[in-house]
Image 1 (cartoon, helix red, strand yellow):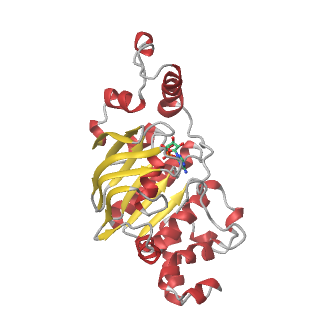
Image 2: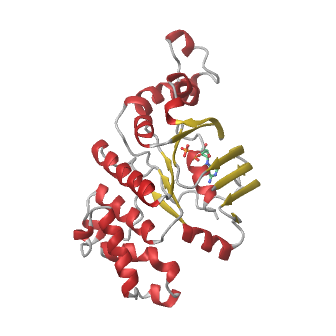
Image 3: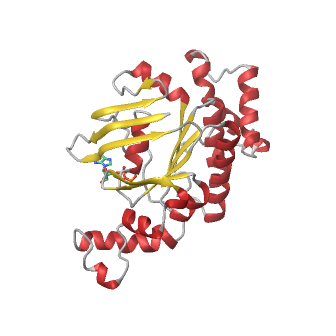
Amino acid sequence: MIKFENVDVVYPNGFRGLNDINLEIHQGEFVAIIGLSGAGKSTLIRAVNGLVPYTNGTLTVGDTVVDPRNKSKLRKLRSKVGMIFQQFNNVGRISVLNNVLIGRSAFTPTWRSLIGWYGSHDREVAFQSLERVGIVEKSYNRAAALSGGQQQRVAIARVLAQDPEVILADEPVASLDPPTARKVLGDLRTIQRDLGITCVVNMHHLDLARDYADRIIGMRNGEVVFDGATQDATEDVIADVYQRPRSADDATQVQGGAGLREDAENATEADLNGPVTGSGNDSERKDIA
Ligand code: ADP
């Protein structure tokens, strides 16, 4: 279980990225985090594995309190919490198999993983992981030679090879075309169902959240403004999360004036109906740990 108790994140420049988050995510749930760009989705996900240090409250994963200052504890935590990024984060020049073997690092002495010397059991696990995401025949291809969807599958296989309890995915399909995005989310869904791995996935695109998640958490301005079963995420709820004006009259009343109105209009087009597009986020931009 992932538990947030009164968790805040205040960035070094004083900006409050998360404000008093209280959440419990149970083992084996598939949770989508939705909200406008800048709502705090990525900050929330990255707090869980200590990529973004939280500054107040308590955050636990299973029995472990996330302690971003304790590097060895953090390393141990991250071996159980796999992370997938929008930009895949594969090593392009090495083979697909060797990328997936990186997921076995926690089970291998550091000096051996540094020279890429993994045992036969590790290789077997890596092949099984690649098989699960349907690209085992690409094992000996260079990762960079694969399509975007295939590269994201390599990233999923690497995380699977870790034998994780939790998979955190920060906009994992934002760079993919809609059919490929659906295939990748379908893979994550199958993994969650078959292996009981908790999946927490940031999604800019509401339709995908509706189609793949058990539970939706809606964020706005660093706060959770909706948390419920997917079927309870009604149009009204969604309009509130996205601060989407419901009519031309409402548009003039959207809190915060022009800036927010612009966000709301963008939300109507891009978040609710538009194509799945990249947000241009650099996956490591907030790695300030
Ligand atoms: P989302 O994932 O919903 O787009 P983020 O979690 O990336 O939102 O960002 C939430 C807010 O925190 C945004 O306003 C963003 O500009 C701000 N933010 C993110 N990273 C930093 C940082 N390193 N320093 C200061 N502010 C940041």
